[in-house]
Image (cartoon, rainbow, N blue to C red):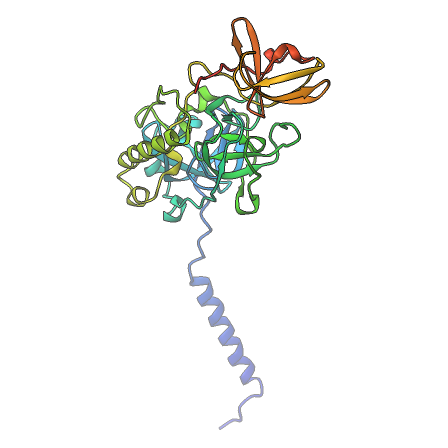
Length: 353
C-alpha cells in the first residue's frame, strides 16, 4: 500500500472550502430592508406637531402652511370635529388630520397603528390663581386671538411654559392652561415652579378661525356657552360637562374612555360687556390722582398716586362720557389724570358686583 501523500490534509481542506462555498451560493440572499411606508401630505395651515396626540401635549415642532408632511401611522387622541384620529409623522410627533391636505383613502388601511403607547398623555400639571383680569390667548402674544377671558381669583391648571412670549411689563414667560390657551405669568399671583412643568416647545402663530375645534371642542361635542361668567366655578362646571361628552364620542377606544380628558374644558367666552385685558403702564400727569373704589368721583378713595408716578392698568371703563382706568390696585382713576391716553391700548367695561 503506497504511503499517504503529505498534501492529503491540504486536499481535504480544499474540498471542505469548496463545499462551503457551494452551499453559500445555494442559500437565498438576505432580503433588503423594506422602505418606511408613509403618505405625503401638505399642511393646510400653521399646525403644531405634538409629543402625544392630545391638544394639551407640548409641541415637538410645528409645520408652516404649505410645508410638506410625511405621515407614517395613525392613532387616537383629542376628539376634533367629531373624530379622534391623529396621525404620526416621520418626525416622531403627532398632528391632527384636519390641519393637512385631505387623504382620499382610509388612514387605518393605508398606514399601521402607531401603537398603544402613543395614546398615553403624560401631562405635567400645576395649579395657579389669576391675580389681574387676563386674556387667555391661542398663542402667547397679544396679536394672537383671545380664547377666553379670566377674571381675578379664577383658578387655573397650568400644563407647560414658554419664555418666548410677548413681554408683559418685564416678563416674557407665558403658561399654557388646560383650556388650551396661554396666559401671561405676570397675571398670576405667584410664579409657578416651572421645574415641575414641561416646556411647551416651539409655538407657531395660530388663528382662531383655523383652529377653533382644537381648543377642546368640536361641532359635535359642544359649542361655547353664551354665559358671561368666567369664574373658577364656571370653569370647573364646563370642564365636567365637556369631559363627559368627549368620552361618549370616543367610546370606541377603551383606553381613551378610561383616561380623563382634561383638555376637553369648554372655552370661557368673552362677556358681552368685556373686551381686551392686558397690563399697560402710564404716568400720572396731575399733582395727584385719586384711585376710587368705583368709577365715580363720589366713590371712596382707596389710594392716591403722585405726580409722575408709574401706574399699571388692567382695563378701562366709560361712565357718563368719562373714561376710568382700573389699576392693578383694583381701584379706578380718571384716565385724564395720566400723561398718556390709555383708551387705545386696553378697553373693558365696569361690571357691578
